[in-house]
Image (cartoon, rainbow, N blue to C red; front, side, top):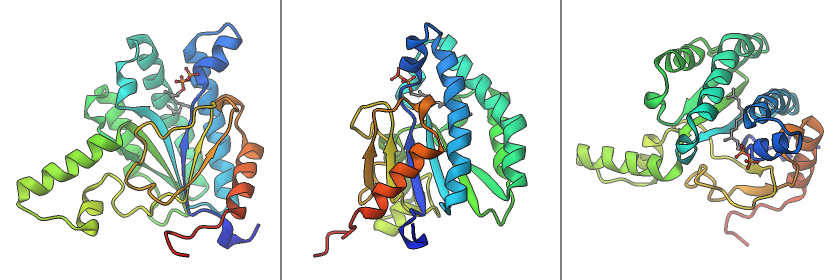
Length: 228
Ligand code: FPP
């Protein structure tokens, strides 16, 4: 694969953790835990392949309505990731960012996330972006309301500067695991020209080799951006 055919930014909808756990007669939290391990492997492979940004959909605004027990399990995963695993990422020259409204999360989780972002290397050659309590519609509404409050008339650049993703290039490729073929309120504005890749593989089974399959298909797609 030539470097020019590698997406600069991949968005990843990590679906299928619950079904994966159910098949094994295990609780959903077991599926999310295995999903986190899959995410770590996929991030490593993406970095190795020359991808610069990987945005992972860890919690949507809609997911916040899930049972308290499941949310607590996810918060524990954040606690674990942002105390242990993030250090390994830094050692590899990579960093993290967070997009979404994290103000509703437990205080200690908010602090771990902000520290994780702050302690990231300045010259990171790979950034793992966590979408947490993220929804594209609320992201756009938030940006528009900020502009209205400021009495500002927005153009494309102005709007982009007010999105959570300000300064991050648009995703070139969106991958969704778990069989559904929709974006579910993920990076709706930014993915206007992204290539979409859907796979039936449940997220805990999605690994570096599955990522390579998506990259191979991406490399064969012709991107015209509306031109002939
Ligand atoms: C959707 O699958 C997945 C989520 C709501 C959470 C994804 C989170 C992870 C993979 C863990 C990420 C890492 C950290 C550090 C928190 P689902 O449970 O809706 O699956 P289903 O459609 O089979 O029920």
